[in-house]
Image 1 (cartoon, rainbow, N blue to C red):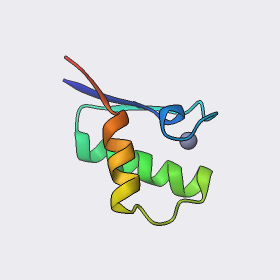
Image 2 (tube, rainbow, N blue to C red):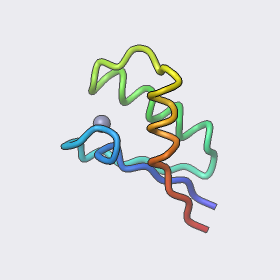
Image 3 (cartoon, rainbow, N blue to C red):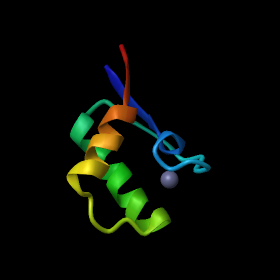
Image 4 (cartoon, rainbow, N blue to C red):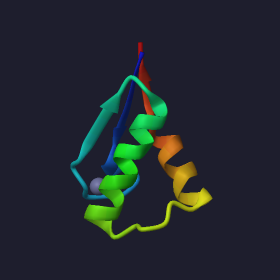
Length: 59
Ligand SMILES: [Zn+2]
């Protein structure tokens, strides 16, 4: 099972894409990217929920 996220679904205009077979690892990658690329230093529950909702799962 692969978890995938297109950052552009959360941050319009961003072309970064992430995938991992571990959901929490994917969240870490996205969190690091968001801090580095978007200046999002705090992953609030709302941010986490937006990311969570953008994750797609491929079998
Ligand atoms: Zn991004």
